[in-house]
Length: 433
Image (cartoon, rainbow, N blue to C red):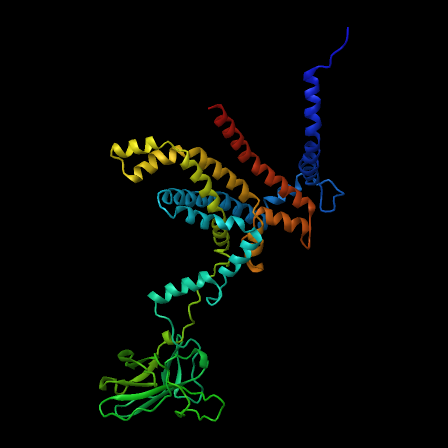
């Protein structure tokens, strides 16, 4: 009686043969590193002495690592939620417009950029100088539209000038002015490039009985040769400078200097002191410190949303394409408006897709490293710290401690496992339907 090889056994052997290379790679690249990290996390910095739970205790007592844990919590809650919400809005609003495909292409394009390149881009976007940073250029433009900006932020008088500090950044004349006299208000400290473009050479106005006339000018001659307190031919008028007449502590008259530096005040200013208010000299508004300690984490999250909102939009748009249109039309026929259709029909039907996007992004943000490392400057990196960045710093920094680094790696693994378990349960539940 001849023996015939079992078909089932043969298939099992063939399956193992095909799976073996993948299993070896999986063990070498995933299982072994995880096992070694868990083992190394129980040893001290040198790896020679058993440290027990000391490394894990330090995770929750060290202020720098606690900041990283707090920032990771902000990332997990904020970044996936905002990216998914924007993706949902983009997908729904562009569904019915002819240029929707082009818009989706533009929104999705940042996905083709690496995290490194995106970090460099947004490091420039968040530059403090409005002449270099786009964010502050826009912010300063909006601010200057609704708020008066200073005219000459660094202007000041010389000791030989007839002006003294009045407190709070203002300057006042040393003696009262009289009607029929010419008041002179010289200042220095304004670079020629910062002068108003339409400023003209300063002149002295004629005397006017019953009024106070005067000149406010930049008492500086390019190339030298000028005299202090004298209006020289090449010196420019301080156009836009605000002048107040103050008598008995009250402002009795105000005026603004013209392009040639001249100004005029009514007779009510007779016997008053002329004051240049501090609003003329306050520092120019340079926008928001996006990469400062308080805003650096939201700023980096904004760059992440810019990259991943397109990913969320594409997945949600695919879910919208497979949605039964009969339900939407039936709801509209029954009198539901578009907001009600969106809230009660569209969103519930898209719940599985939204869950996929949220879970994917949550896993992704737990290991975010590149953006924080590149965008956050050294002075604010501790405030923007996240666990993946702290893992790098603890493992490869100047004072590396592989015990702490391994403990952080294990903590990240423990944080990812619940999200992965939820995702697996959701996929199994969807498969049974």
